[in-house]
Image (cartoon, rainbow, N blue to C red):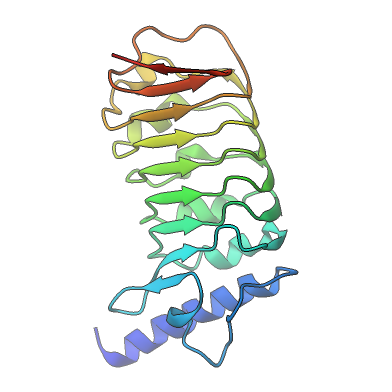
Length: 210
């Protein structure tokens, strides 16, 4: 890739990150338009200057979720961690359909609500932590069948409802090791055919599937 293209990538993504910062009432420390965004706090770029990591857990961030439109432009993002902040609002589907390289998604301990379009999440995603928010809705079986790389799935302390996906939903997800559905509004029985070696939590109990 030419130097010109690398610079263009960097400029576009820096602009998107700055737009994200402007939606917050308490923007990240040391984010300044006069400095290359690859050197900003919580940002990591690859050799081609694409932003790959946005890691700002426990930074006191406050604001609405409208920043999602900006983050959707970070098309090479692999790690997104905005946990333990005070972000509120619903998530736009655009972020899930655009971040095709996303492997780690952690939005836990915020004030987010609404339904999650799980079917739009990247098929190679490995970790999802949406715990301790106000999300609701049901889980499509197709998500677990397609998420071949998923190893950890935590949606505890929300208001999800319906049935917890049975073995037929999980049979293709051999990589899953942690499932936490606790403190939601699920109903029905838990399948005895849960994949082997899975740490599974529901209600206030923790089980290990042998």
